[in-house]
Amino acid sequence: MDDPTKDDQSNYFNYFTEIEEHFQRRRGTLLMVSTLDWALMETWKNAGIPLEAVLRGIDAAFDKHDQHPSKTRKINGLGWCSQAVLAAAEDMKEAAVGAASTNPPSAKSPAGQGFEPETIAAFLRRNADLLHTAKLPHTTGISVHAVAEDTAATLRKLAREIESAKSAPRLEDLERHLTVLEEKLFAALLAATPDEEIVTVRAQADLELSPYRRKMSAPQIEQLQKQYVHKRLLEKYNLPRLSLFYM
Image 1 (spheres, rainbow, N blue to C red):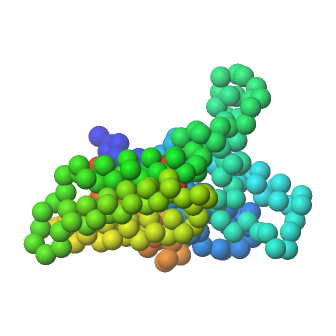
Image 2: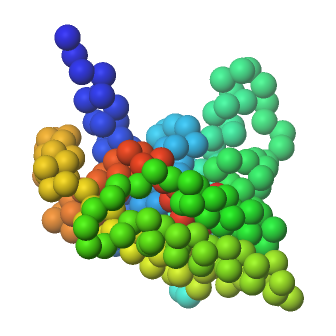
Image 3: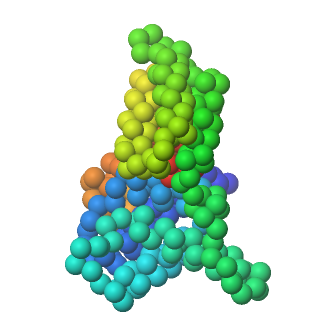
């Protein structure tokens, strides 16, 4: 009997590699996608946006940019294609039910939620609550619970600062802060998880990555392996992603 999880994992890797390769072809260079780009791709996948919609959206973004080329503004990341991807997904959804799309996708949709201060603050507090109530492993040495509680406290502090600020938060600075918090949390989880479990997960990743190795560079493979392990750890302990791309 076929293992259904094998197809799921293959589709997981294929989704990322197809998007990355298509983006690189349209840009005409082998520019490495950033950590935020990987997070954005996973956001699209988790939101149920079809691969075809993402590829159409990338094409639409580049086609629009090519019509009005600029020496100073280039498409250096998938974030430039985000709205076009959401529009393509909406068009496909409307076409599937036989209706013409007359309105652009809402900025409040699950995959394209706005970055209003109150929305960000609510997102940070929700993640803080999940960290506080999570059932985390107990080990000698580093305390995952302590790291989680410190992270939750920092998220609540950031939420208060955003709500009391007179101007909108600098999203780049906030995202960097959240990335640091997430990396510390991942480090604690990795340290507290038995080596055998990590080895098993990495073996699963290697197995599912094998069809794509010839198409990917070593840094790309390493990044995808890392994402895979992190995803499995978060699923195991029911923990949230802290990046703004998961709002």
